[in-house]
Length: 168
Image (cartoon, rainbow, N blue to C red; front, side, top):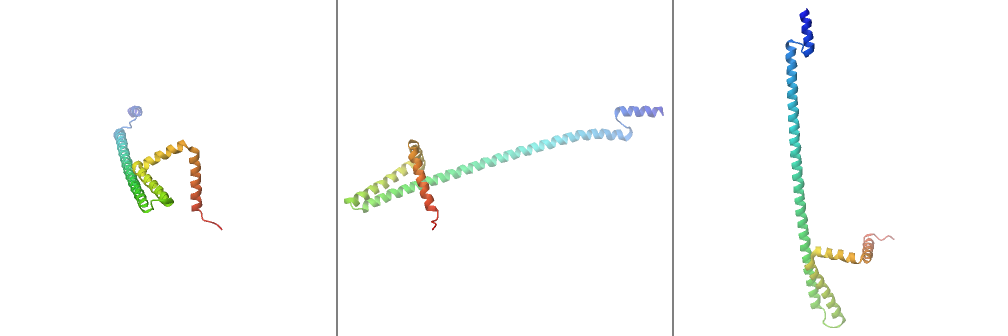
């Protein structure tokens, strides 16, 4: 009996209960070690998945940016083409008016002035394009801010009058 009590005290000190229980205790310790490696594997897998997701998101954003840039470039090119076509149309219309109006008199001088204005506008549009027109507009507004605000107010008023229905 004294031997059993000593064994129990020894078991209490080591934390082992003896027999097969001690073996299970060691397996539990090994299982904890495996659990630690499993946790590390899970963390590594999650980290890898997160990195792949970041890469995919980055690729999608880059592709979307490229597509948007291409669309913007395409639209800008189409706008420049339309501006060039409009410029050609203005110049052609100016030439047609110049040929069809009488050469003398008030009607001839008015027709010639209109034709000259259309040809000049067509030439300007063809040479400057939309970007040049925008730069010139900004420059004009900076030089004359108050008349520009008044002109914008007047245009806004006319648009509002044209778009609202008349009420009786």
